[in-house]
Image 1 (cartoon, each protein chain N blue to C red):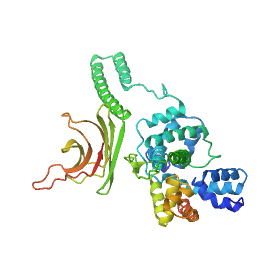
Image 2: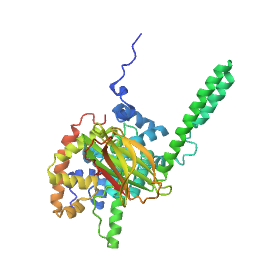
Image 3: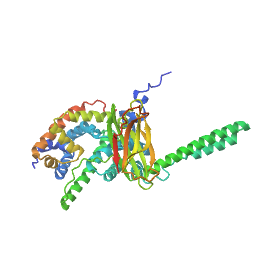
Image 4: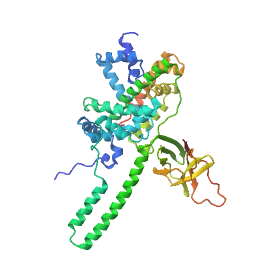
Length: 208
Length: 245
């Protein structure tokens, strides 16, 4: 008799820790493409803490952030493609959609503020409640690696990356914020991305 | 703006980070439709930078949001996620036990077991319903984090201002031996003990009513105190975390 397949190490881990393993990711994507509603619930469980954190950091408005995350899932459900057509891991793919939507909100809001002559708010009051068991969140180990990679950048490069990615500012908005020449900001951004690429691309199997 | 290909090469990083101005963004997107080199380069950049999505701290999902998402995507949830109530299952089991029992005493034992199970389930259900009621009516979420021992912790208060009750979540590193976390109300005259949480180490959540004597509550504080203060010991009365209404 042929012995059955040996259980993988992933199979022994609690469900929440193996949700983002490559095999699980592929299976989840396939079920989403097949319109499996339970797969949607699983994706919501895995991705929402990260998406809410990302969008709240950009918009600083919990209600607006919630709207953006809801819209993100609606768009994702209607546009998800099989892995062969889109190999981006699910959470980063959702994060890109969410950032796009959040940036639309941010830039519309800035235009409105400029029209109304409102001084731009520049506070750091993060409104979200920190995930009470964040270290158990799928992807938490990647969070640590990303922080190490960002911390390893020269300070001025880390700042432009944070302003661009995590606050959704454009080149010229970053230049205004830092009171730096536009060309300098562009150069810092390119150098920072180049270094980050090297560090982050070396994260083997980071979706595990 | 120059239309040479060098310009597109220089803008790839900013395009992936969505940091281009709106007009340049559109110009770049149009270019991607006809330049395989840039398309491939951008895809590689996106793949390499994908872990940045995990650069923020995960945030507790607001109450009711999960349902909002599934309703927005799939339509209202009437009947979709409904499952049989536990009491119905227990009632069915009771009926089955009564109907199939052939010996009276066996049936009586089974009956008592099922009744006990049913009572426990009803208690759990009502506790759960109560918690969900507070969480779904939350009008305000307050949080504070702290560092202590060998880790970090947090105090989250979800306030239902309609029923004047809070859902509280406390998570902190395990307290030193002989010490416990406790939650106090912050009042105009000082701290008022609300509940002793225990030694921590794992997240604890509970529902809290406002003080029965009608004291005005300004917020909540988390403290670490000795279970039984030793004679002469200094009691720690400085909150390690606090949130204010």
